[in-house]
Length: 155
Image (cartoon, rainbow, N blue to C red):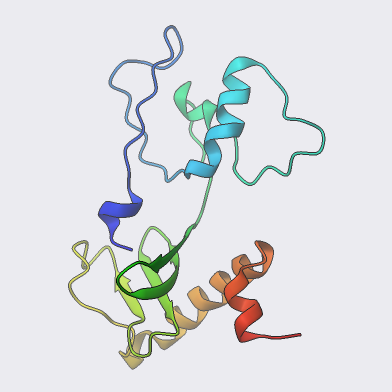
């Protein structure tokens, strides 16, 4: 789950509101799109809708806030190979777990290694960081009822 695959540009044209050329450095998620568009339209979500993302339209209006401290991702590859990846990315770190692929897990210190060339997963000097990220990742997986966990933690 390379940066180039998760840092995808989004272009928004909102005349009279979003200034041309505005760049937003805060991380947002594609899950934020629905809530943001509803807000831009002045519409409400259906009453029974479970909203996963947040409204980031204040950023388009030039306001400052951080919609997400962490960004999570999942990718299940089932073409020529099989891989089940889950990721947590903070401003400084990225942890990618490859479930059922022994030895493929990844940990990168993005501020020191933005190109993700030095996998620190097995580096014991980052054990506490890795454990903290793993704890957050597991909490997110439980929140979304990740099917991977059902395979790992049968009831």
